[in-house]
Length: 79
Image (cartoon, rainbow, N blue to C red; front, side, top):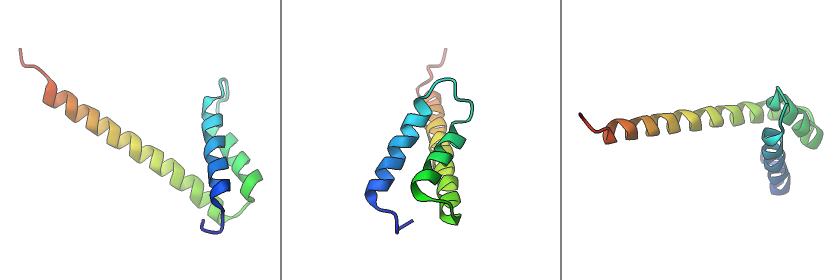
């Protein structure tokens, strides 16, 4: 979304961090999506942004799981 300024991106990043830290909120993605809609407005670009964020989060988790698993396999001591 090139038409969105850096300040809005930083505000959305802070909002996402805040939403993920709230206790007793069952659907944090929905809370963040409604916050983003209030800031940016509705549109196709916002849904693409939400999909990108979810995909990047999933990819980061997969890379970390694979990295830690590989590290555990390589450093395992044989009995």
